Length: 248
Image (cartoon, rainbow, N blue to C red; front, side, top):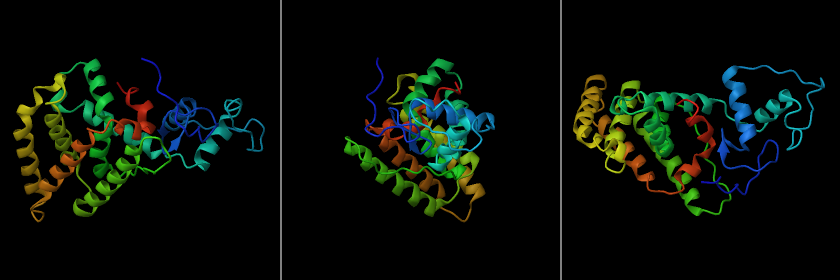
């Protein structure tokens, strides 16, 4: 299986071919990995020329890491998305529903489902993903951007921040629903009523003044399941692609 076709938008850092959005920008693999590695390891660079004006392009992007990082921030690459990916992966991979799956099975599962779980965890982390409408050949991507933005905004207004236990139960609820479509978790649907009940009990006990809180969280989950049918959904979230496998 070969590499996907390059995007029509070149890397916004060095001008090389890009294959999707990474941390809010269209970037090549090299610039995306450079930014991720620098932020995670908290690396400090010093400009090799001393004037912080080194050129950053396809042929000279590796000359001065200080100026390359400076350009990443000037173009507003979002370092918060790196933390979001880490939290998403760890939260789902440790979920009780899939605790007995092998590492390889979990890797295959997340390769298909990570966009849905990223959106499931957003209300808890209060992270922000800026999903911009860009000029692309696949019009479905624009439709998805519009729907995702509206969904997140509407849910935030109705429920606000979701606590950690609600997030865990929502992810479990999603896995149970997706079990009917994915063979490696075909056992999960039998657990749906259990996790639905636990979510309702948690909401009733901790948010007694919000009678329909559990229903709103479940409705949010149902909306996320609806995105699973879009063939371009993973492409829309391709700016997170390089992080999902590094934690497995």
